[in-house]
Length: 277
Image (cartoon, rainbow, N blue to C red):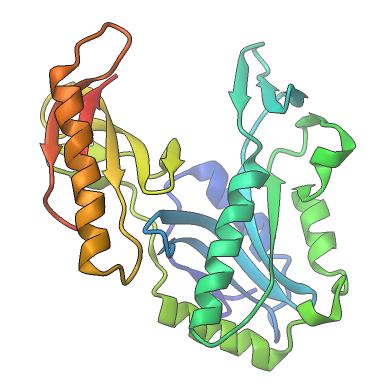
């Protein structure tokens, strides 16, 4: 698939991600109704900034794909995915399908509000073909290698309502432009803190990021309070008051097992405390 039909919204900073994207791109048809967008962000109705690795539309439907460059083996323990790396280190992960499912629903909702109803199916693609998957069968739905992903994308739709025609594909493109997908920035800044690209924890009205001070060797946990798109003044005040109350509580509270408030920054479109880990 050539650039133009494949839109690289942001060039990936990671070699493994670029290789994975290229392995998929070079094997997709360069013809209607196929289109793809890689590495972009959108702002959900809740105000959460969502990262998308890859969105593909083809005859069988629309797919939001999370790329994972995991090595070694993966199994589950009490619902948690556990990766054992080639050197024996164990790393716990949340089920990545849960978040990509949420993002797919949020983006589908925004597209519908901008004139195009489309069902977006979630998928996780492991780019290392040597990864040993030892997941129970119910956790393997939507999980693919690159070869399996490409085979799945060429399948006819499981439901005719999901079929994408050339006109549908062009309508999705127009709706994405209305939604305002943006570059996937490597860094976000709140006050003097540079935030990592992806939040590591979220709630209904907030998102937590790992961050580093722009001038000092000082890691921090930054909580960004979020406001819904188009929220009225009373909702904005409610969110700002919640951030202010949490900052006030943390400023007075001292305990070795609790993060300590470093800074409260109510400026900009969101507000929240920065706390040391």
